[in-house]
Length: 480
Ligand code: ATP
Ligand code: MG
Image 1 (tube, rainbow, N blue to C red):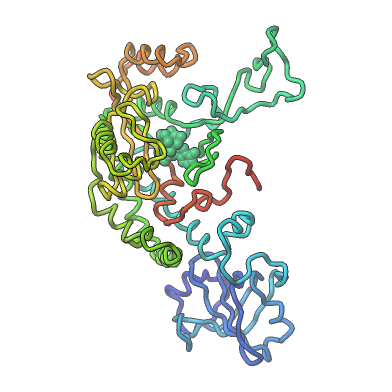
Image 2 (image 1 turned 120 degrees about the vertical axis):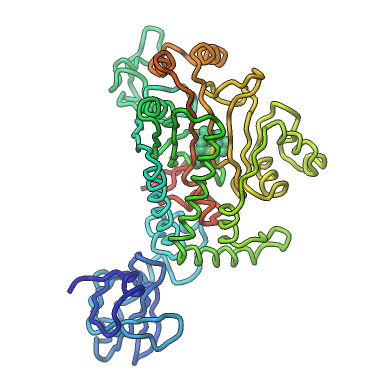
C-alpha cells in the first residue's frame, strides 16, 4: 500500500478506506483499553488521531509509542467519535520505525521557550510553531518566484563569492584558502592575495545588486533571490549574519515605478499567505494572542495577526520624503520628551529603527515609504536629485520591524556617478565592469532589496529573526 500524507487524508481522504500513514508522535494518551495517538508528518499543522487497541496490537509494542517516536500505521479511516478532529484512523497494524527515549527526548509535550528551542534548532521543526513557520517560509519563496514569473522577470543568479567590495567594505566575510598561520606576504608585510585561490582578495557577497544591474541592462527585468552575508556585529532581533534577500532590478523604471512595484509585491506576498497558509496562520495567531495576554495592557497590540496582514493588503502605503519625516519626528512627543535613544537633531541624521517604528506604528499607523534621503547617508549608486543634496532612494517601513525594503533609482549618468564615487572613495579601477554599463547604452533603471526574513517576521508575527530561518547565523553562533 502507498503512504498517504496526513494533509491529503484530512482534506479528502475517503471514509472507511484502508490507509497507510507515517509520521512522528506528538502525544499519546489513553488507558489499558484504548490509546489515542496524535501523529504528525509535517504535511499540515494538524495531526491525525490514531486509535490503537493495546490488546489487539500488543501492549509491549504500544509502550514504544512515545512522544517523538516515528510510526508507520495501517488502518481504517473513519469519522471521528471524539471532538477536535473530523477523521481518525482505527489502527490495524502499527510499526515503530524509530523509538524516542521518553526521558531523554528534549521536546516534551509542553510549552518550551524560544530560547531553549534555538539551542535545539535541529529538533525544533517538529514543534507546531516551527512547522508552521517553515511551511509558510516555503510558500513565501514560491510566491516570490510566481510573482516575478507572471510579470516576465528573469531569475538572475549573482555570485556568492565576489571580488567586488564596493558596498560592504569592512563588514564582509573573507573567502580564502591561504594558511592563516603562514600566509604569503608582500614586501611591505601585507598579505599577498595574488597567491590566494582566486588570485585576488575575495569575500562573501553583501548584496547582489551591482551584478543585478548588469542583468537588468540586458534582459530588462530581473530579480535575485539568494543568501547574503554581513559580518556586522549587530545583535538585534532584526539582523542575521546570513540572510536571504530578494533584489529585483528593472530597466526604464523611475523611483515611482520602483515604489509601485515594491508595494504591489509586498501586498501580493501577504495576500498569498492569507490565501494559502490559513491553517498555519490561525495557529500562529492564537500563539501570538496567548503571548500578548502576558503583556501589560498598554503594550498589547490592538490587532490580531491576520488583522495586521489584511490591513497591509487593504491600505495604500503612505509616501513622504525624508525631510517631511524629519519634521514629523522633530515635533513628535517622544522627541520633545527625550524618549528617543537617538534624538532627532535635524536634517541629515540617519533614522534609527525607533524613529521608523514611530512613524509607522504611532503616526501613520500603516506602512510608510520614505523617499529622497540626504546623499551623505546613502550609497554611491543612488541617483542624484536636482537639488544636489538628496538622492532618489526609497525605504519601506513596516510595523514591528522598521525597514523591510531599501531601494533607489540608480545613477545612470557616467559623469555624475564617477564624481560620486570619488567623493565617497569608491575605487573606480575595480569597478570598471560596472561603469561599462554607463559607458555603453546606459539607461534609467531602478531596483530594491527585500530582506526575506524581515518579511517572514511580519507574516508570522514572530518577535525574533532567529526564529524564522531554520539555521540562524549570528555573531558567535554557527551551529550545524
Ligand atoms: P538596516 O538599517 O536594518 O541594517 P540596511 O540599510 O543595512 O538595513 P540594506 O542594505 O538596504 O539594509 O538591505 C536591504 C534589505 O535587507 C533591508 O531592507 C532589510 O530588509 C534586509 N536586511 C539588511 N540587513 C539585514 C540583516 N543583517 N539581516 C536580515 N535582513 C537584513
Ligand atoms: Mg544594516
